[in-house]
Amino acid sequence: MNNVIIFLPENEYKNWKGYLYGDVFHSKFGTAIYVYGEESSSSYQYSPHYKCIGEIVIEENYIVRENWLYIQLKNDCIEKVSLYPTKICSFIVILYNRNHIKRSEWLEKVKFPENDILFHLIRDISIIDKQLGFVISKMLPIFKRSLYFFQKTWLTPVLQMSTFGLHLTNTLESFFLILNNFIVKINLSVAYRNYILARILDALLGQIIILYVMSYTTSSEMFLALTEFQECVVTHMKNTVEWLMGSPAGFKLNYPLNNLLGPFYQFHISLWWTFLKISNPILSILFNCFLYLGNFGFSFQVAILTDLLAIVSVHIYCIYVYAARLYFFQMKGLKILFRLFIGKKREPLPGTYESLPYTTEQLLFGTVSFTILLFLLPTTLTYYSVFTAIRIILIFVGGILTRLRHFMNIFPMYITWLWFFNPIPLTCTVRLSNKMNYLSNGILIIKMKLVSEGWWNTVTMNIPKNVKGPDDIEWKKLTSDVLTGNLIYPV
Image 1 (cartoon, helix red, strand yellow):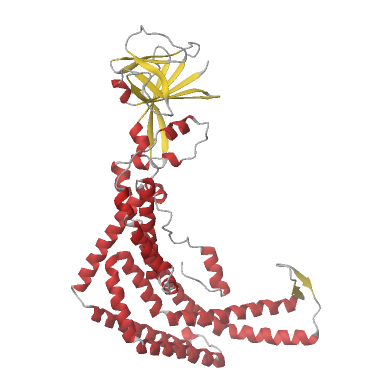
Image 2 (image 1 turned 90 degrees about the horizontal axis):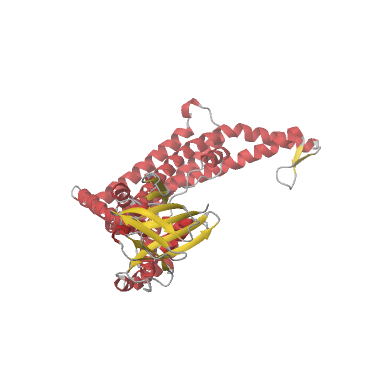
């Protein structure tokens, strides 16, 4: 006995009294009949892809046709289903909501097998919604020229080095893709709608913060406070180096090396502070420009804050690089010289070693070098530990600002509202549930319902592809880099 699965529009069929139009699909699991609409005439061209496959009947006295579907209604309910020839006698009626399938964005993106009965249903119900394409197309050249100005001009290298510049370029690129997508598809996806609303909320929040801050201070006072903060950072760094040149935490460091590293680091701190004093007028103009551009939104203010943090801590990064490189090469030298004591030599093939008899001169020179590096290690390690700790703190502060900026880009207010009150556009899964038991003539009626994923999965699914978030922190690699002296970069 073969199964016949009939897809029938929910609630719509109750008012039908004519011929049924749709499609028929045969598979090894049975026959699937898709009913998409109803017309009064059997010769009506409902769609070039669909054909007349049956009719709605009220009474049992009807003309029998071969391969013709008959659905008999009584009191707006399915009383009987027939399909001739009569050897097919097991019917399953699945009631679907046409509007829900049309409005669902993710259901059509689910990769169903081509022989799946749901694949044909979702494919055949197309989304038809065309509006405003002409008006939006007039705005596309403006964004294209703005994007070209920031991507293809002499400003490009400068913008690539600035968090604010990258954020501005990515924002223009996102709006360009949104307009282009709207013109092509004549519709905006949920992800782009959420992005637009997030940008509007971001701009409003930025304006509120600017108005609140400006009610208590002025731009000149803010720049003066920033200059005082820079001076405070420089003073604390000098005090830290002086503390390391003494006996930090009671440790007795190597005196010659300590007197070499301490003044070296102090010189770079003083050099950076001198540069800040000389460039103070230029920095004041740039700060006022950044403050004005902060009106674009809170995420732009966070990007500016990230750049200011990088400018204030440039000397810290330089000192960290010096300490890290010194520690790295010292540890590498100790590792190489340690092979003298076990009589091994590294092969060109990675990770392979071979035995090698060393001469007396080689052993003597290697032992002396190993001893020198080993006894200088506590001093190098002390400087490296202090500046690496400061570097890690700055990296994590920058990482928090980066994630805050990304969160403002994808702020899921619109998606959350849809998920709670109108989840149909977010649905991506089909759930079948029994609407009633078997009828007397062997018909099983099932209701097809579209359901969405959990809230967080829905949010991550609806992030625009061009909005790139920060990479996940690789804790294992970060720990390894800190222990071995490799440079650590922003996360």
